[in-house]
Length: 517
Ligand code: GLU
Image (cartoon, rainbow, N blue to C red; front, side):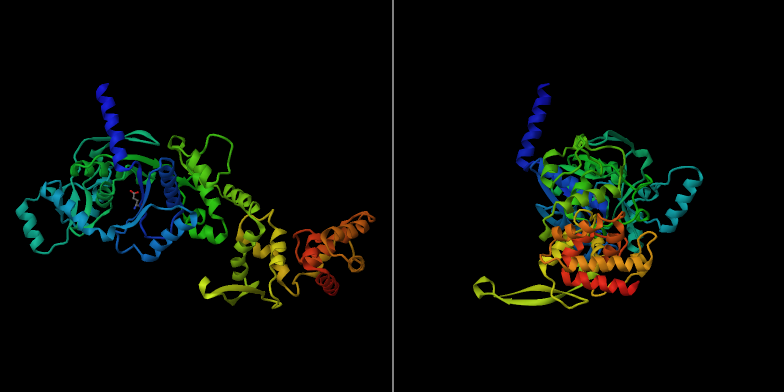
């Protein structure tokens, strides 16, 4: 009992001296930032924040062929965009070769690691043989039996080699913060490759060394990395390092409950960003990929997550990536944006679809305030009119309620940026009206609208409804009107569109519609 208390005190004390919880996010820059990596980063960050600990970014670029600077940039940009700030780093494994070398030499010297000269073909043949016997394929330890002399002479000949760590046969168990007690039988694990040579460490060694050197206290990562954990624990033990705590986060699954992959749709964060999902949406959504607060509440700000997050509410079973939930959350955050901000966010999409064009605007500001500053004005590409910000706000505002992602905006609002609308005249026809009747209905709308002096939505609505309510089917007046103004089967309501377009444009569009009939 006393011993247990002393141990707890010692642990607490050593945490204090070490500065408390230290976690790391350790992506490999071998592809665009994956949505699963973003989830891992977020859980590490939340855990660090919750425990007032440190969050460290480590770039695991030991695979020199597949690691690319643009992928590292994408990781850093993505974290910034999401608002996940790191306290240390980025540390790059490629810049720490000397550190690993020391430990590889130590393992070799102590006989815990050895050079292996088996060729790819040897290994493949062995693998096939083992599989044909119904055994799990693993390295058979052949080269561990070579004498020092034999090794020297093969090395002298310049044969290709790799360095392996000897897996001792025993049971390795650890307490996973998510999954509870986990036990591995190391008889089923072959000797692990830990370095290509003294200067080129491989994943399992570099991770163990870095976690130790960087004083990591908790390793929080995806469940797919779990098979490496017993190997890493054995390497830690061989090097005399203390054990870290582990938490393996549940797999992310597609809608068919198989592991999330390209087959299910976009998997990189940048694709979601380009589609127009907001960072606050992704944070909220990613948090629910494996965690939930145990209540019905679905909307969580970053701060609320930091407050509520706890590792014991992380689930063991796979977390399904539900795109409808993502859309729902994004719709929520879009509805809660100020119109100014939402319009600003939509601008890149409007430029991309060439509805508007940016023009450089240089503003001279006094040198004391930084000299010349550059900003943009926009013109409506089709008409070359200057884009008025109030106009833009009204256009976007007409769709704020129903917008699910920013990239949808172009198709919804394009008709506000066109001089002439392209649509089939047949669309103007309501139910079984004849073309003549539609034409008369449009004339009627023109007459009513022309009389309005104070042009605003309320007056437009009142004038048109007074007339529409006189006829049996309001659609006879309102449908052709709405189509004439939008050129679309579905759009915002006719009164709102008319208000945004202004009197002149509204009447012009009605006249153009008559020609189309
Ligand atoms: N670099 C590894 C990966 O990106 C993760 C390492 C770890 O978390 O232990 O898959």
